[in-house]
Image (cartoon, rainbow, N blue to C red):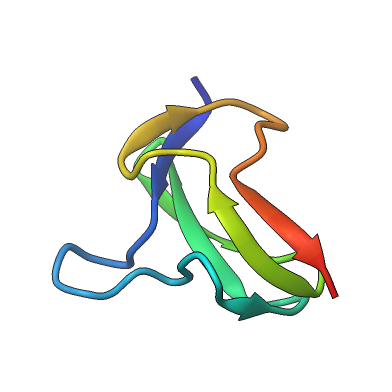
Length: 72
């Protein structure tokens, strides 16, 4: 396990992105916690979120897809 996937910055906040949201390179889409360090993950592409592939607070691995994005 590399880290833990979080869709929100904290339990009281809304998700960074949801299905149907437009993203562009540099937009924060989630946080990965690894060794007590919270790393913001930014979109690398421009497009629309089609599906979230990981459940909130689930463990993730290197190179694991997190979102399905339809390129714009």
